[in-house]
Amino acid sequence: MTAARGACDRLIVGLNSDASTRRLKGKGRPVQDERARAEVLAALEAVDLVVIFDEDTPIKLIAQIKPSVLVKGGDYTRNQVIGHEVVEAYGGEVLLVEVLPGFSTTSLVDRARGKA
Image (cartoon, rainbow, N blue to C red; front, side, top):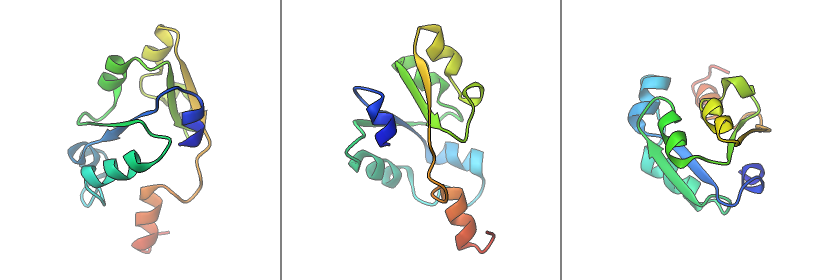
């Protein structure tokens, strides 16, 4: 989050709703409900606002907010980032930041279930 915050004046975090997460990740997800996840994110000093979206991708949210910088984890390429075309069309940029290994919810859940 600090790398994302360093690239902008205000950091708005888009968060998948419970229904969206379930559609994308399957039964048993999310591990924590959207309110709990939003509260944890909002409590971070670097975060100014958390917006929960119900769609499977944040493209509608990105089009509404029109961020000057769209930040995504470095485990993606620029072309894989949903909304990169929208942001770049009005002169914004896509920033890929380093991901700390072992901190994804999926990897934590897999470890807890003995899969990793």
